[in-house]
Amino acid sequence: MTDPDPREDRRLDRRAFIRNATLFTATAAGLGAGLELLTRRPGADAQTLPEPVAQVRRPRPLGPYDTKEAVTPYRSVTTYNNFYEFGLDKGDPARNAGSLRTRPWTVTIDGEVKTPRTVDLDTLQSWFPLEDRVYRMRCVEGWSMVIPWMGFPLAALIRRADPTGAARYVKFTALHDPEQMPGQRRPVLDWPYVEGLRLDEALHPLAFMAVGIEGRVLPNQNGAPLRLVVPWKYGFKSIKSVVRITLTREMPRTTWALAAPSEYGFYANVNPQVPHPRWSQATERRIGEGGRRPTLLFNGYTQVADLYRGLDLRRNF
Image (cartoon, rainbow, N blue to C red; front, side, top):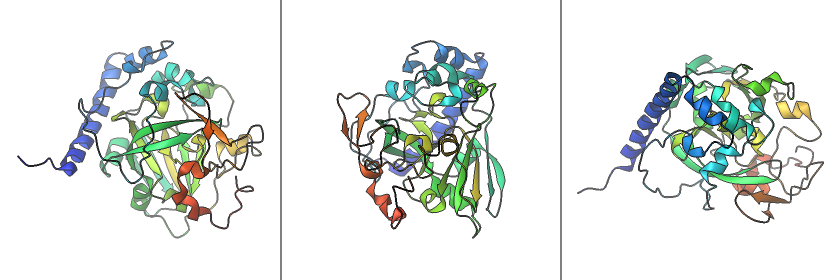
């Protein structure tokens, strides 16, 4: 008997993932928005969320970007969320995000690219092999998690978009549809939610586009069907439910920087030495742990330090 080919496993996982995503959406629609009923129930159990892509997922060796720290329980990851499009309380996204329809879903890639296009999400996913990445996630509010994402490198998408020589930044725009996102009926932020990265940040190998968690289709409350993950920055930079990616010449005006420019800068790098104006960032509370632990510069991802060489991180917070 020969050992299984791990490349074949990944190909099968990808095909299974896309098939399950489609089946899950069709099932939810066929049940008359059954997911909405389940996830809106107060205290809904995470077991009502999408089934695993594969019933048995073999343990895999740690990848070059994975943390060895204990993974945060799936229930916590999917029921403790900031996603103001569905409400301000941490439990609101799990209760209210069933109204989000994730298929059909298109993503527009435009701006300073040689071939602007709008592409169906399933086609976009098929362009790239899906990878697993276990990342720390640090919220600007002082709490953190460890989350096993599934997705593909943002750099692969940017390179496929073929930027022009004028591209310096990447602007991300989330879905704006108050019928599907009831939190957008309240003017708590300037909708749609917008985030941005410098082009060299977007091309860093750690920057990631996620379509799943723990081998499951990305739950609505976690930013389905497509979200950004930038693990060395505070969590609000990792925009959810992305519908447009625009390469620009100028630094984009981002949602939280517009709402409170003295508190939320464009860079938002995790930095224990730069306090938030209203609280210290020196420590953090890991969800599921007692006490607090020291916050790490760049959330521990020191391989990004060269991106900011010569930049005053206190002014460019």
